[in-house]
Image (tube, rainbow, N blue to C red; front, side):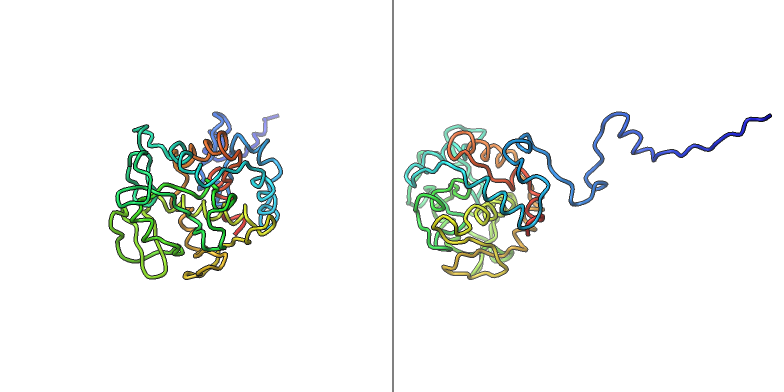
Length: 267
């Protein structure tokens, strides 16, 4: 009798090649919820991986709250290490402007760099106290004049150019960092919101949809920060900084640098 030939189902070529050579499908094929994998997922983040929403936020708070703390005066020397210019070990890279400036020019005069609280210290009234006031995950070197323009303004799009600000913009109630720092700012703000939840004697810091929040323990705009996190993914500089803080100073991490997709998973 003649042999009957069965038609076999063929997997799509892309899937076959991916199986054969062990490739990972592109992010677009995996969808927007695809997760980043880090070497810390089975250790540091093991109690957070797989969670979303309030459960993820609570788990991350517990994880990152275990940290060493430094004094505000010690921040000067720490920033010379965390923000060192990778191309010039005598300099630091300044937030907002992107300028490389001599480590020795730290101070309060025009032309110096000083310690910028990205979560403005008046938003929750924590000042320079050990804890939120000295947390390196949101303290960055910045040009004195540019830092003064930012002041305690919330973050939002729009405004006029900041002199010496590298493309940063400002108006009466908000500040927009240059494009290369937008994601950094977003991830620093959201780290603070997870780390400081009111349970250790400090204010419960939260992002919201407002600007001009004043001294309330809020910073906006959340929707804009989320957009910045998407538009400006973590850079090698930001990732190295996170590692130095973890290894040398606070021994905790900014989870949104390791897992930027967790921003949308929580908010």
